[in-house]
Length: 293
Ligand SMILES: Nc1ncnc2c1ncn2[C@@H]1O[C@H](COP(=O)(O)OP(=O)(O)O)[C@@H](O)[C@H]1O
Ligand SMILES: [Mg+2]
Figure 1 (cartoon, helix red, strand yellow):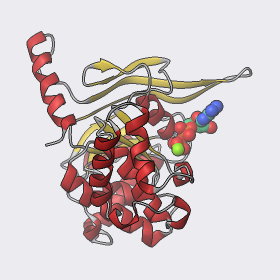
Figure 2 (cartoon, helix red, strand yellow):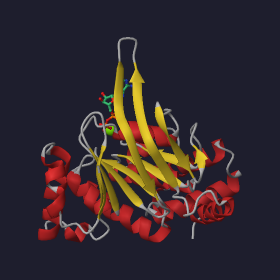
Figure 3 (tube, rainbow, N blue to C red):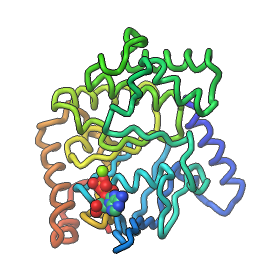
C-alpha cells in the first residue's frame, strides 16, 4: 500500500474522532468552486459552483469541451489559483498553495530540462523539495523508472527519447514524489493515436501496480471511459457539473463494443444537448449516474 493511502486512513480516523463528520471524508473535496480570471477589462468565469469528491485510489476524470474550465480546475486543485467561491480540501486541509502532495503532469513533455539525463530529471523534484537525500532519491528514481519500463534509458537525454518515452519519464518523475494525488492535464493529447492508446494502457497497468489516486483531464469521451473509474461531465463555458458517471467497467478492450459506444453517445448527449440534459435522465440506463444537476 502506498504512503498516500495510509495517510488518508490516518486522517479518516482523525476526522472520525472529531465527530463533526459522521462519515469518512473523501481524499479530495471540491465544494461549490467558482474560478475566475480577472483582466483589467473584465472578469472571465471559468467554472461555476463545481463540486466533486475523490476517494483514495480513484481514477477520476474531468471531461468537457475545450474552454469549460478543466485546466483551471486542475490548477486550483494544484494550488496555483484560489477559488472566488467555495473551497478545496485535500485530506481535510484547505488547499491554499502548491505543495509536494499534489504533482501535475502537463501535456507538454518538453517540461523535462534537456540538460538533465532521464534519471536526473526524475531525481530533481525529490532533491529540490528536500524530500530525499541523493542516494535515496536515486534509488527511488530507479524504482519508478523500472515501473514505467525505462530502466535502460536512465542515462539518456530527453531529446533522444520518443514522445511516449518522455511521457513515461514525466509520469515516473511525478510518481516518485509519491503525491497524495497525481494531476494530469491532457497528458497524451500531443501524441499520435497509437502511442496515445499505448500510454493509456500503460497508465492503467501502472495504476494496477501502484494504486495511486489520479485526477485526469481530457476532452476525449473515449479516453475518459478508458482511463477513468469515475467521470465528471462539465458543461461548456463556464464549466458546471452536468453529471457524474461510474465508468469502472470499461477498459481498452471495451473500445468499439456496443455497450461502450452506447455510453459514449449518452455522454455526448449529456455534454452537448442543453435541452436534453434533463429530459434524457429518466431513461438513462446507467445504474451508475450518481449525481445529475
Ligand atoms: N490566463 C487566463 N486569463 C483569462 N482567461 C483565461 C485564462 N486561462 C483560461 N482562461 C479562460 O477560462 C476558460 C477556461 O479555460 P481552461 O480552464 O483552459 O479550459 P479547458 O482546459 O477546459 O479547455 C476559457 O474561457 C479560457 O479562455
Ligand atoms: Mg485545458
